[in-house]
Image (cartoon, rainbow, N blue to C red):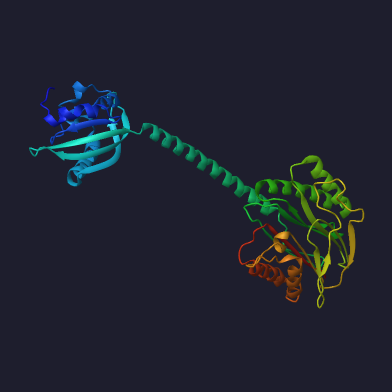
Length: 383
């Protein structure tokens, strides 16, 4: 359609044709007076089919309703900028940024100038990112579900408080993440003796928990077979070296075996914080590990790895992991074995069912917050 264009537009056409963005100019009735070559290319609609046509013809009613509101803003404010779509000849919609401005010529006639910037690549990237994020969220949900199941499985393996032949056992476990590398065992054997053990695998999270669970299975097998503690350390050390290999996973443990009458105890430790034996009115005795950290060297287990200990009625035995000792206060001072020893001495005066909470509360007060490492704690009071 041939339309008379204002003189100023004839003078500007060369400039508008040189732009890298699509440009149209329309009159007050939204009839298109000018479209540059970039706009023609963006829409796929020839210039002959654009000139003289009202802009509303190319949009759906819903689209034009939105666009009309944006045009009103441009008229009222003088300009506007928003993301929208540009109809194409094939019926598709091209994502664009529309920058519009209202102008008035010397005769008082008003026109609208709109530039269109193609953002289809950006939109594609955004769509791909949304798709990837959706996949990541789905995968994260699957991982969280797996972790929740793994945590329930690990919780099911935890020892429970019990009474055995007059001896009372209390336990506590807290992983710093959903699952952890600590574990504890309380395993009576055929009415002969009571096995107690705490183990700490290096690291945190899934990998440590998997290794810990595998060591747990091996340890239970040896304890149920009645294997001597020193021999059990040898077997566990060899098992980890042979099956897990040089993956950097090391582990420490303390194991205790108490006779049925509660008067004798065997102890064996490997690179682990000392077991404590608390006797009323005395400083808790420290039972130091005689063997080195396991999982690294074939000769980590000492030839005289086991210590025999005489027990008295009401003695209390405390096994724990370094999540108890390696706690720092606001000054950066570590609680350490000596600090835990003081807590054990103080809480040994409490009724047995209050001792665990007394230790944990004191450790938490020292650290001023949640544990930074996995925590396992096993307490025993002999008859």
